[in-house]
Amino acid sequence: MGILSGNPHDEPMHYGEVVSTWTHLLTNNGMIAGYQSFFNHTGDQDLKKLIEEAIQGLKNENNQLQDLLKANGIGLPPAPPDRPNANLESIPVGARFTDPEISASISKDTAAGLVTCSQVMGQSIREDIAMMYGQFHMAKAQFGIKMLKLNKEKGWLIPPPLHYNESKDC
Figure (tube, rainbow, N blue to C red):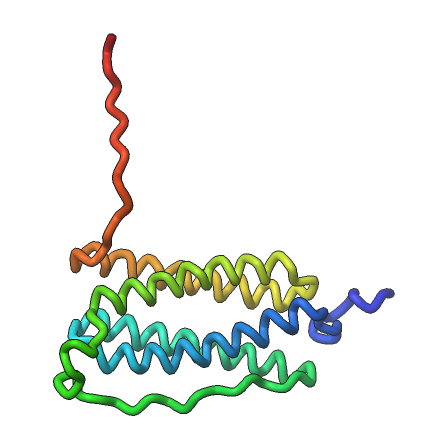
């Protein structure tokens, strides 16, 4: 039996898995702080609910990532402190993020997260890590659909030029 057979939890992580999971945790830590700030700037109640859902999703991922890294003796990246709650009206209008800007940023992050999850699944040799990222991917895809629906309902989606193929009879 080789080193990479048997229980995946007993297999060592390779450098790509270590870097990917550590960087993912570091990135999530920054996004949580950013989304907490976005929450303070948001006036739309539907968007606020999705921001809370996004933060909770990132925290759930972080719990799994931290457990994995700790179990493999890898130090954790730094995390900024939670952002305090602020009153939207106390933020000057010119300094506020708008709801469409916030929604676009979270949508962009979600799309980038899907790509990252796919990349880590592809590079993983440990089945448990690949499966964990498969679960992250599914959760992000489901959340991304909610963001898309919100953006369409609120009129915040700015589509690229649309192509209509009109067939001309000659």
